[in-house]
Length: 235
Image 1 (spheres, rainbow, N blue to C red):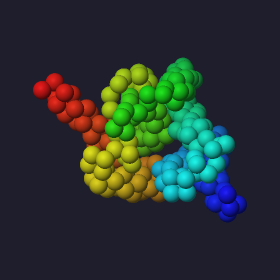
Image 2 (cartoon, one colour):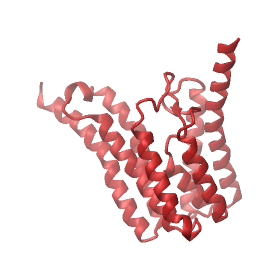
Image 3 (tube, rainbow, N blue to C red):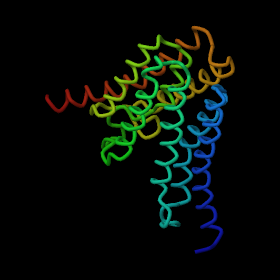
Image 4 (cartoon, rainbow, N blue to C red):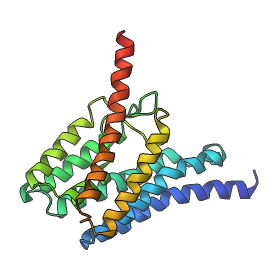
């Protein structure tokens, strides 16, 4: 095997691993309560996570470098950036009642660890099964919307429970149904999220409402597909 092919494949693994480096910087930013910087780091890590699979398939990384598991690497990066850093941020930010901050963070990391270990976390048609531990997005919405502390606690408990409820949750890149509309919604979300960060997580109502509407779209697509599939199977 030419060394250039192996080097190119390994570069894809390094690209994926850059996400955990961004997670580490995000954690330092969280320690310093620099929340906007933290979310910028998590946002770039999310972008990397969204496109690294395309490079992995293009350069046949699993075939060229079977020694390194891209799936395992991806899970490690995702746990740091989707779960661990956001859990710390939620606990340390004052968004929760002080007595519930650490228990809520522990609930997040434990339920997410179990979810990541689930071999059936995705359906045959590429939806996530249950709430897919997107605590980076949850934390972002909590920082932008700033709900009452007890409401925040309730949201965390409900989402932790929904981790184990077998409903369909949209994967924006893998699900083929409404893909064009979903990608457009994803681009819109990126623009709105960037605007919210530009305004230091205090963007005003129109941007906040837009973010909520896009989030509701992502939830609704999975539920609608599940409802239609159930309706067809029972007909």
